[in-house]
Image (cartoon, rainbow, N blue to C red; front, side, top):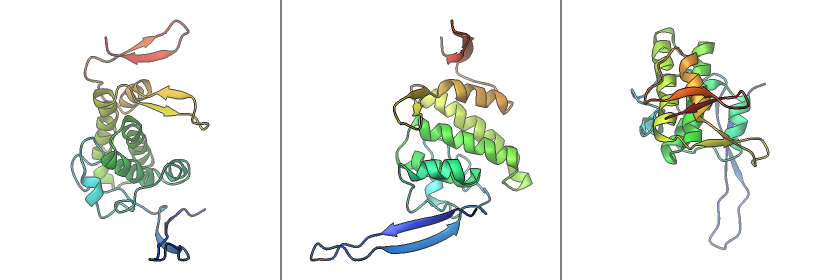
Length: 185
């Protein structure tokens, strides 16, 4: 199934009435290939993703519902561009975490040129480390939007999964109920 970027623009006339909606169809999100526009693209506080000619969201970021549609149904490259755009426009740990997750997906699936994959791996590690360094209180929510999940533990595990070294004194401990939790003593 093809995923398409669709932008809906509604024009308000001088009389205050709405003209019929105009649809603008963009690029397919299925065929994107990741090519970094800057050395820190997708890592807070970098803004280069907003100037990246490969970014289909540079001019119009995805909305609150659309970001989840992209996350669940589009490629990891489209997910990277969506979340990196959101991170650049409104910095937050959830966006930084999903940048890391999508970079991990790009790396594991080989969705970047072979010579770029080592940089993708490093960027994924840096994205997860940025969650720990800059957004340690960050959470994401379940599908109902009511149950919060902390992101430092999966960010910590993402760094380890990518073969990186967690920095900043973070450690992984077992809680009383046997769950693992990243903490900074």
